[in-house]
Image (cartoon, rainbow, N blue to C red):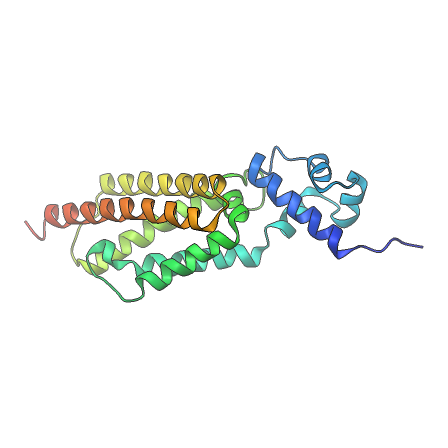
Length: 210
């Protein structure tokens, strides 16, 4: 008689897998590591998930990856005040994105910094590129004719690479929701001020304003 797969064991394996991926990264994590963390035999892990790739896709569902992407884009577009144009949706969009980060802390850490070798290997770089692209778009929308130079793009890339690393560090370091929110608020206040200053400099240096 075939053994029945139990929902409780499946959830335990998924939880252990996500924690292992967030801690050590996809490439360095083995099915044996996950089995030990879940307190089950490795053969039992393979009964539920025949490969590490399938287990990763179950632990990091594509639907949540898409939701992360959508919330990120909505938040950046709402924050047009980075380019000097405040909008009422700012705080609501930022809150939705932060709520997602809090709910899916380990998933976000994995996607941003620990997914090398997986199907989401490019997520971290795509995160940075999307933030740069959306920010440039908002700056130009708020200040028609402004020139976003190659030098400014390089600065933006480094700013948002730091965002990627900082967000991963915050979510990895803190489990308490209040601590996460305070740390993100502190970093956000620093980052917004820097982006606003960069925007003012670009406006001032633009040939159309000279």
